[in-house]
Image 1 (cartoon, one colour):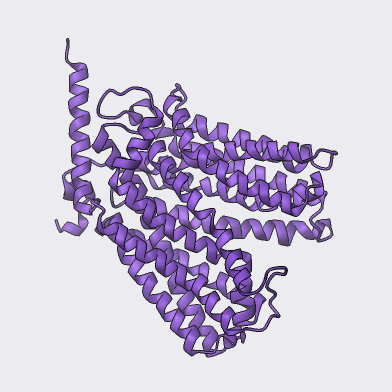
Image 2 (cartoon, one colour):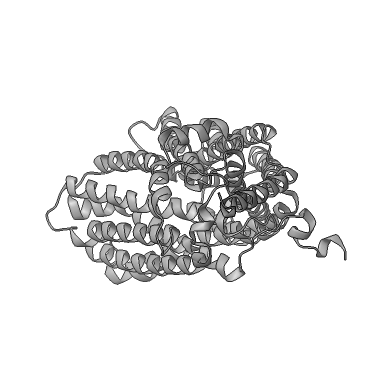
Length: 493
């Protein structure tokens, strides 16, 4: 039998556990939970203003503070995660509990207490409860891929389905809320619309939670959360120890956090105004072209998954990072030596070139996302092999803490850069003229920061030990240690 027809277990000599495709799809339905709520919480400023009479400036302070709170609560969830062990499982209990906390907080925020004469303290308190529920749901979901499968050929498949749902759900929700629902309420963001939007979102999130629970039911068993040695309850020192000694996690933090910061700066509304409205000169068409370049790119993730399954997560990140850097460099040259305003002319050669390059870049970036999903699961298994402890919430929570603290500077970087352009009392408008300063600043933020982030990724991955070959040895050692621990437990004393 040729090697390409052999399973990963037969090739590597490791008895990998595998998930069924329907279980993977059900898990990926977590996108119905996270991204539908993401679409609703994006309207929190409207709820604060309409329902609680809070000014925009104060809302900004609340949202910034909540993001810091969100970052801090991520690793703290590890203590809850470590102690929840019931006959109904761990994952399902946490997913349902997180959803219920989110649902109650959002319902009260957008409907129950909104427009009832409540003020700032009530809104802020409800937002804190929402953050707690979101943290429980989101961080629990991040630990599931490592539990469902350790097959290196299958782990990237989870990333494909997760990426697809995370991109498609916000687009569908945007259509439902803004195209189908908003006109029914006079096209205004009023209390009636916010109530309806909240109800729709909570139903969609509830369906997603049920599907995730169905997908993980077969794996939500106490034996799947055991390490290879007897350990004490989790302590804060354990989190610090993981951060300082888990080398793959350190590499991942440097790699992904730098990329995330660049992406969030580039996605700021004021940067999109500079890029689509001023450089290209056609805000509406440029936005449509961005969507056109995004949807087909989802299918690139399937190809990226096959590559990662064959060459490993680390190699996938490095390879697709090089591809993204190359395409981004081509886009920079295209804007410097071309005529950006021609992109906004329907059917022009410039528009076609821009769409093709954008499609390729989005596809490559999605392949990086797929590689990252698989890499995080590998880092969790690396920790199990290194310390003998199976603490997925600690690994993912520690990364998330640093990632959110770093990416929280995105808005500051974007607004600071715009202020340097002279927008100190006003904001950029699509009708503003394109000066040389605006041109170079926009290119620096839209393309320059991602290039810097990718350089950091390549440097970080040079010191990462998680090659495909090493992960095979990691899985072999884990299997041997678990077998030894089981034999020792069964041996009469």
